[in-house]
Each structure stands twice: as C-alpha cells, then as structure tokens.
Length: 68
Image 1 (cartoon, rainbow, N blue to C red):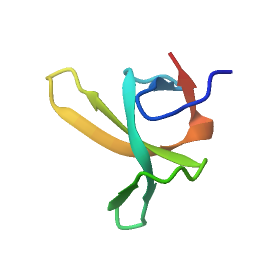
Image 2: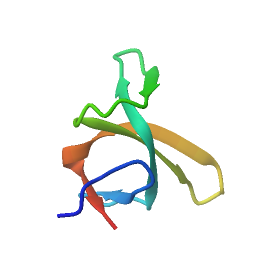
Image 3: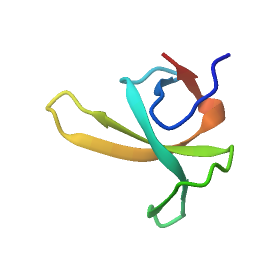
Image 4: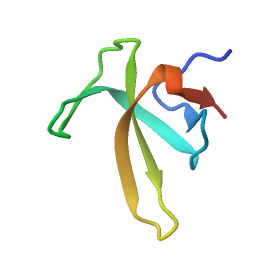
C-alpha cells in the first residue's frame, strides 16, 4: 500500500470525492482544526471541491483513507 503524504490524492474507503492531503492535523471536539506540518501518523487534513465548486476541508484518520 502506498504511503499517504502531503500532496497525496486520497478517497475515504467508504467512498468520497477525490481529496488532496494538505497537511497533518488534529480535529478538536468543537470542530476546530489545528494544522501542523509534523507527521503524527494518525490524521491528515484534506481539501476537495464539492459539486458546486466550493473548496472544503476536514481532518480524517489515515486508516479511513485509500490512495487514488
């Protein structure tokens, strides 16, 4: 399996649009995201465009992603 790094194009294993990994991060209970450049091997921040062209971002566990 290919390693997920910044710049990787990924999808959720359960299905999703293609997303680009833009950093390593942590998501807090209040929904805020701390973006870091330090690889924590657990979560990554991804960005993608929805069907209307709006740029979205969120943090996902690496275990939930697959490289495209």
